[in-house]
Image (cartoon, rainbow, N blue to C red; front, side, top):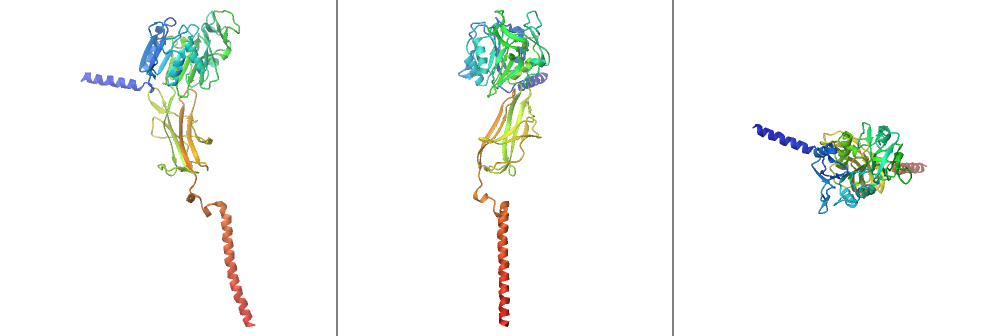
Length: 431
């Protein structure tokens, strides 16, 4: 009996652990080059991956017999890919820029790290496609004012100066940085996380001379950590240093970076979106102009264990025909649903315009899953027997009253005319 109870407890613990995993399929591939990094120095990261995600495979590229396969029969094998700095210019298998772009287009998530030792051209080319331009091999960030060692290549970053406000990660303690820097394009889907100090510069340490030919970034135009999220909600993270993930520095901020990129943080979903007539919610009839309707949508956020209500005050509805006719900020509604927050527009009237209208809610916020709900519906004009008649039209009151006054005046005139004629006849006879 005790063995049976123990088995039940074991099964329950396993089910609880599985339920706590990310709701996204989360097979993970870790690629590293043992000639550049020692994976033992990142055991805390590997343990975190094993604890948070369902399956973790590790490939060492220094082994020439190893092969990186991201697709099988044109289908993506992994959801997550972590690439440590790689030496050399070529890569093995699917680890090239074209395949990495295809991986992201198919919904995969990637963390890539390049630095002055390992800046593989294929990984750099992939990041360049996203609008991140990492510094080449041998280029390192230097700061003679904030350096903590003799070479000034280990830099203590100021949280106030270097941290870019974002919803992905909160850096709560001083950061010691040693690595590369990148330039950024104006891609609106990039999310800068850390920028270089104003007194820093990234240059070719082998050349030894600082000039316009050997310098990659200067001042705070350089960035040290950059995130990206595509319209398909695939995520990518570029880091210019391995110090974020080594055992000494692997803290909650580093975990947040991993969890965000691999779809365990800031993950949103729409549970439903609907609209209906105010006076007849169950009606299936087409809308007509000036009908009074209500729009509702439910939003949930993954909190690491389960779906919970996502509560914000900037969710909007757009009613569109070519251009938005209405843009309505939605209000939160209290419901018994503990997994989603319901938002409502309240009653509003459709425009006095027939055609094809789109009920659209787009919640695009940097760092959060993009929510897009659209429903195209026809809005018809009034039928002949649905137009208001006579007295229902306020503008007609003057004309109806005038017509009534004419009728009344005519009746009075006739009465007076008849009675006046009889009196005249009697007077004539008497004479």
